[in-house]
Length: 450
Image 1: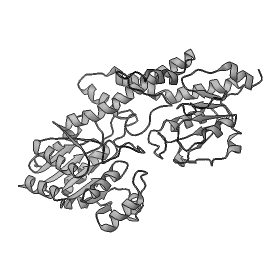
Image 2 (image 1 turned 90 degrees about the horizontal axis):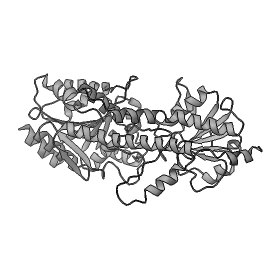
Image 3 (image 1 turned 120 degrees about the vertical axis):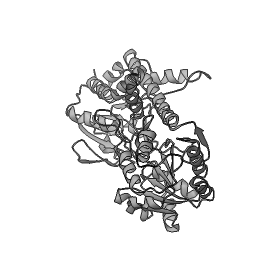
Image 4 (image 1 turned 90 degrees about the vertical axis):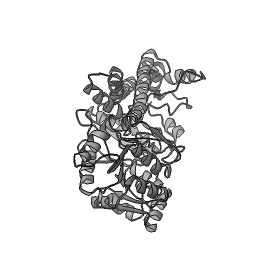
């Protein structure tokens, strides 16, 4: 029986496991599978990624190049761009992107593409695990139905699960191994095989009753964050109007030992999950004639924060008798969170374009994310850290609070700073204007000699 054979091979680690998509999710997962004792075949259509990995180099900050090199040399990790490799695999973990279309609808084309390749090469008894974040029902609709249309049966001829990725790039405490992993199978045997695989790879596996529950759990996690971030962003705008320090308010509220969880405002939301996942849930809910007002409102508030940062900057420059047009603006930090190079959905990218459209002469400094492509597909490079040059800007806008920034030195340059992350919390200076605190007009007038 194929189920018994696969379970034995997973337990004794002779099963050949595959990972499709070697990005922020797939590459760390591959390395954990190698550590778990498996021979891992990593499939990615980007030949540059494959060549980099074959050369023993990592392009993911959380994965050391030494780990990749050791795995490749030992033969335990085999990167390839050939889908024909699926013929040899006992398990396939799908870790491909699931972006939103221009109309904010789910784009599952990467999953569909992988499934089309699996249909060509799948062998009987293969375990398939979808890890890409998506709407409830995707695992059955895009994978199970397609394979069963070929005459195969889930739970007998192939085994199918959903196990949402929970990657947090740059997190020093939680990684692929020690972050609990939820998994749901289309049948009980599917779930048992999925649990058997991942029990060898991660510290804790959390089985649930179905793929839909696993899919929904991922969306709940990130929609919860999106809604709460939106609320505190709205509170920050309110405090700005009332000249109350929202950061002090949050600190005070967080002293309550029960019934409160701290969230913080910012210039917008970034990363692959929080900007996208709630819209997957909202889109799917409409199929059932259910319209989520919370999700849509939260998305609207968060999406408008880059524009709010632009307006806040205009207000600050106005106090200094300047306008955004023709002002020299330096953005501090471009990645979507501190101490990483990940630019996915970073609000800084939109803020950069907004400043350009408003006529500003805008540069950026980021020691991690050293370049990006603008909306005209031109490569924009970070400027070098130069205190003398930085002092010549009309204002600086802190988007990402990297720990490596010299905050005291930046503050001492005397340039107006719009701080969207409370990064200058411990520095008292008249030229620092924080999001959610209002604008101290009297202090600024002293500076401009009014």
